[in-house]
Length: 292
Image 1 (cartoon, rainbow, N blue to C red):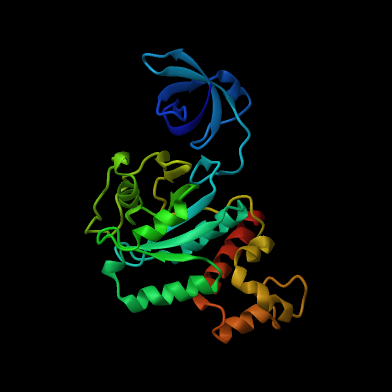
Image 2 (cartoon, rainbow, N blue to C red; image 1 turned 60 degrees about the vertical axis):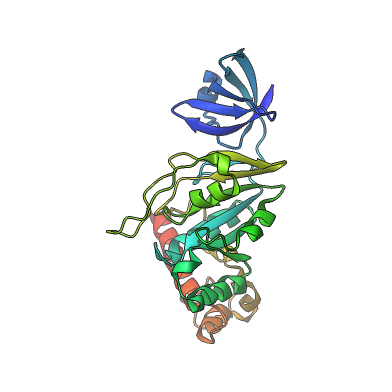
């Protein structure tokens, strides 16, 4: 039989057969020998050992379309990065890291700012302009007030979408609203530290409607850039592209060069300064990592 892994906990993998049945399976030792770790979203061949108890073994992981390390998921069509501007305040550097890693994995990525009821509309419009100007489609919503949900429903229809972002931004609340049967635990924001409690501990795939799945993933407060060279980082800042022709040197990385089209665009307000400063920080981090 073939199915899709929807959850993995403590060595057990829960495989949906596509017809409403979920089997608790163990992965054969051959996976460990080959250093293959099954991921949520994997399509797998499995054997049923006990139909009444819905027990089985995973025999083979089918070829993956793509995979991510953090969050650890496979075979996604698109990513929806959920962040907030208030409670918790926006960690823009973390957002840039997610955008870079999704771009590296060649996964179409959309940005969603939740809890717009908690921030001034001028602040929301500022960030809408920043990221639309960088080439991303941006959604604003308030799950609490049920505003903007229809746009998200339209976005995810017919796709497998991974929700990613920090804790406390409302990923699980959004998931619950779109698919009430998910029955996910939702946490409150700690008044003391204004951060989300880690309510989602494992990546999990949920069926929404025909051909439509959503993956909720644990919240991350940090994200390291893996498998990326510093000089290629600029490829994941699309707003740089049209200004690179004005750089004096072909290999310009837009950091220390005197004549640089991107730096000039930043000074002229054509490229967002905060985005550029985060680019500089990430570039330096990647250079330091290579050194050690």
